[in-house]
Image 1 (cartoon, rainbow, N blue to C red):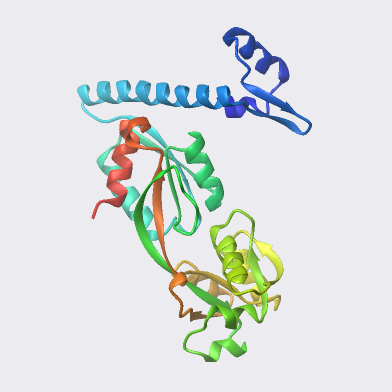
Image 2: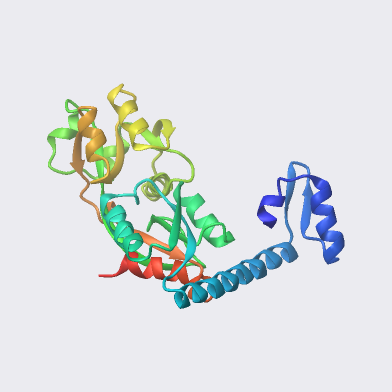
Length: 269
């Protein structure tokens, strides 16, 4: 609620602060942000909501079935067939639980979980998730995406230094893979030749098809798009190209029973 009020009318924020007697918002030249007290009130309120949901969940059990709503934020790379199959199995077993899914970037997923906007998140293991609980969910591999006539396609595998010599279609800010490539470039003391940045696999493959550069993307998620655009994929030979999709949450103590059930079901072996 407080996060929503950051962008709301001033009189509402002032009224809440007057009733509580504590400054919850910092007035900045370009807007407002939560103070330390505001962040603490937000945390306490999230705990209260979780307790409220726990009560209704328990009452649902007494009346013959678990109930609740779980807010899930996930990257597009997480929303695979593997994800949907497990989600369907969960919903079939718990008809009283509703799941809302938001598709966002890695950074947005982590921020939403940390701020309590999402109960559960699915993001890349390349994303910094310090402060959150993390559970391996699935595995994918990063591959090169290029036109079939490109010089690198003739190789059985390529290295980062091979890719960095060419023009690139990069990933938008907030996508963990883009930040990873920049860190690899810094470690190799080179500068990536990024001509433009995109957020989706469809846009990435469209730009590669147009000859604007080569790209890297997660396999097998990119295979369908690459095939549709007549593009080739080549394995990357280095360890960084293997990664996990992970489930993240703030901890069992603040998760609702419905969210704990969903998390357990999604990562069950």
